[in-house]
Image (cartoon, rainbow, N blue to C red; front, top):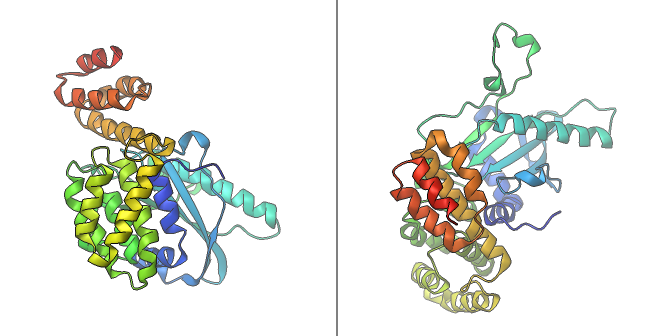
Length: 331
């Protein structure tokens, strides 16, 4: 498997690769009619991934094998960490489902194809418009009249922006991560961090606190460009008990040695760059919706983080798309 450098991808994999967390998530969020047919005690994590290389900065995935009714089936979770919803997500899901079936047939071509249940977890900025979760919504023409000849399926959408914090359920780590995903694009994300981090106090196995804390610490530093190691250390120390104070200080010193505070660690820099791109993209889609296709290719070419911060400010002040494009071209 390729090295994971996207911080959203990394945190998603680390969390949902934990079997109790995966079971808890499915237990709380699968539709009742699906859950009643799902034998969660048979859940197994598959190591395969089906995302194309050019889409890995926008999506990651996890595949689980599980008994559905009396037959073997799969649950394929697609995590969409773009800063906007992609209307072609159903098409991408269909392509990935075909890959899963092809892989399955290579292993045993005598069997009938297994059912694949496709949940999608989304955490970009909230949008007023609802996304259509049916594949047939992408098709043009008399779809209903020709339904017997049209492939169709429905995916399960978990839009974290539409959940209140109290509605987010599951294991402690699942709650921490989903709340982080929900708020990571908020302008005032720092105000949310104490309540999120304090959830770690609920962990029954206290020896797991350092492991989970380091995972959360790295994610926040990699994605929130205006929170330093010292600032985050202060927030974490105030959110946890005094007994965890030494753990926090040790972790902070470890990150400093790795270069996180100066931003020289490659993965961190790339995570910050991606976070800025996603934030700018969301702002442009809201302010210059019809000109996004002209603007975004120019922004993708800006590699310097300090310049991206200038662009982010320019998006707020530019009166129109042409003015913003002129500013970007100066770089």
